[in-house]
Length: 296
Image (cartoon, rainbow, N blue to C red; front, side):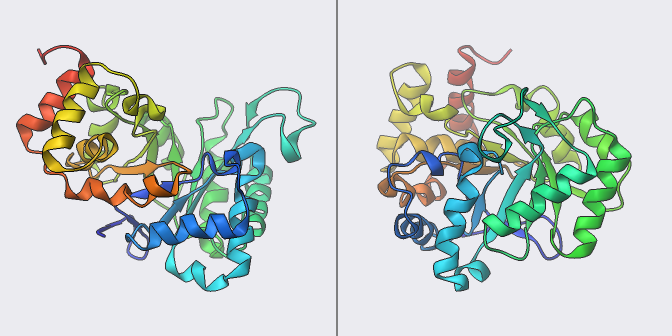
């Protein structure tokens, strides 16, 4: 599978496996998690996307339990994780209000916890999970620079940032931000026209796409989008998920979809998206179905 370079020594697989729902599975044993990892690696999906908050702050530890049983897995993958969201759950169950924390102390503590939970000595890509309206960009930028300099983190980026949020943080940093993980799908088309994709495409910063299947909504029910997905999927011998993912892969911004499912059969088919041919007219058929109207 193709890799997308973020820096001279950090590259992500063209499709990323996301751990958002890892803790929701009925089976969270190391053996079952290992089966998911193996299903990804067999397809060339080498990048695994985490966040400290996933599973109420449990998902990183669930993944780490499988890693501890076979430490050799670490050199076969890239690990992404995120920090700054605090909710009343797990180790933060004493918190009274959901909030964001981009202070040096919190980011450093989060990284140390993630390293321990994930059973690794390095994070390949650390993302600030949500824009913090109380962010001191000098403090946040400095700690991200220091984490990269320490070797604990190899590259840094953000998630859910708008261009001005990105520019504010980057203005206080020596290390380049390398990606922005935002919601993009046939059910969330705004980034194609609101300037988000254009901003990163202009700077050759490949964006990551969370919820590329619209939280599963694109895979269920019937409607204009599903009808076009089904037509293309049937013609090319794949399923809706492959076509919806290929729609993102076809964009010149080099969008990196983050796919999340606990179903081993579906995990094994994630790379089917690479088989789908999406020409310009097909892309616009899907785009217009998502818009619910012709383009102007």
